[in-house]
Length: 68
Image (cartoon, rainbow, N blue to C red; front, side):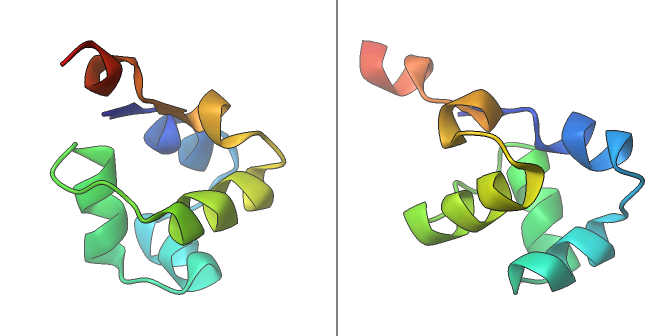
């Protein structure tokens, strides 16, 4: 799954640690999502989308998963 999380985080001037604290996860979890090593749970994706004021689909691209 691709994500725009790194771009959004940078646009809002947040570090991975900052965003992790806001979302209730570790900096390492944010890094893993940004590098594609970890897919967030629905709850975490929702919290991140809510923080940035965007729908989940605007942050996370699930199209690769739908093609498999």
